[in-house]
Image (cartoon, rainbow, N blue to C red; front, side):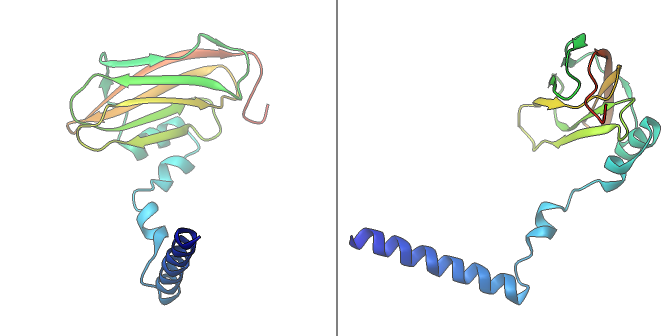
Length: 155
């Protein structure tokens, strides 16, 4: 009983301190979590604008492994798996050429982490899926066509 009381008091005290810091404006989580947000890239309407906003397509990336189905039975859930076998990978971005908003995902990696991503994406129609990776200040990309039988992006 005494242990539960202490836990409750600690939680209430910590919540009060965080609430006071938020109210005073000393703690601003929106600045921390959205500091690296690339709004221009995610709002781009064309593949050229999206590629420009993330730093270009770069050279062909032979060290990028893209696993994606040749035919997606449902465009609402297309599984994508990306592994980049390059040193010092900073970002991996996934784009779909014919989607209304081509940039569907972008991931930042800290030094020494495994550059691997597995994520389901939406595709509106048959299109190329592009992966752009930045490593050591250079940009590499790879693309593969995926045929969609049932649309996922408004289709």
